[in-house]
Image 1 (cartoon, rainbow, N blue to C red):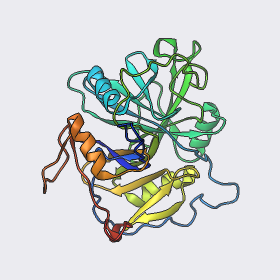
Image 2: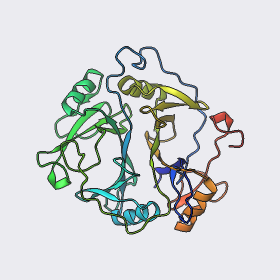
Image 3: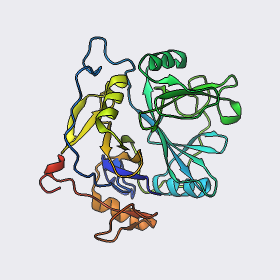
Image 4: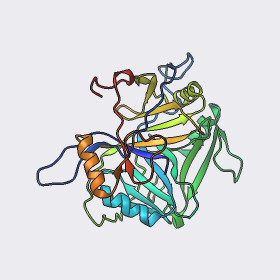
Length: 328
């Protein structure tokens, strides 16, 4: 699987408890190549009177397309002790922290390409018709009837009871960015369950064990894009997302009022969601790497290049030239 999960800082070791807690799990952090400095152009909605057309509050979830849902469930529950918050037919919704944020496992067919298929952002007072109208006014047109995801297109999926939604359908909004990378918008209460807002997850299924690392939240996504400035203009023009800091030449777009962010990097290969970062408390990379190895995720060989192999981990030391500490 070339799209990876990563980890940041929130991890605290508790007395008598072998679990690691919160800040962003480092299942692999890809080193980002130096990119030309990019700043928002004039005319971006950030800071304009009235704010952006669609203010976003937080990350809600990521969906992984996997070849074997049962095997992936065993992996994520065994490592992180994740509760099944809801089921959408075959798709499993695994709660992150106390929810409603989650990681979904879908696909489950031999031959599918494992990947992060999309991410989801939350908004206040979700109304799919209003959001489709606003997106249309800002260059994201409705998809053709029966059409799928496409660049600068928006579609609504009505998730019915057969997929764990409301009897009359739970509206779910998907949009394509300029490269066709898929995002989703839902209410701040959305947990992947029943109800008109997908806010009812009333039959949780506890994991078989506690897991080794306790997750807290979603920290960030890094997306490889074909035109960095175009992508920055798109996300800022619609959602605000001010650039509040940078990692060297890589601008960081803030999501909501906390520490969550979106990184848009000019990357090799096709545009895609490169990795997601999940947070834990008191992150110490040596402890996390040892825990991963205990679970069967081996460190990648020193000097190895290219996408990581399955069940491998590695650490990158972000130095001052990329906004890191002097010692990395």
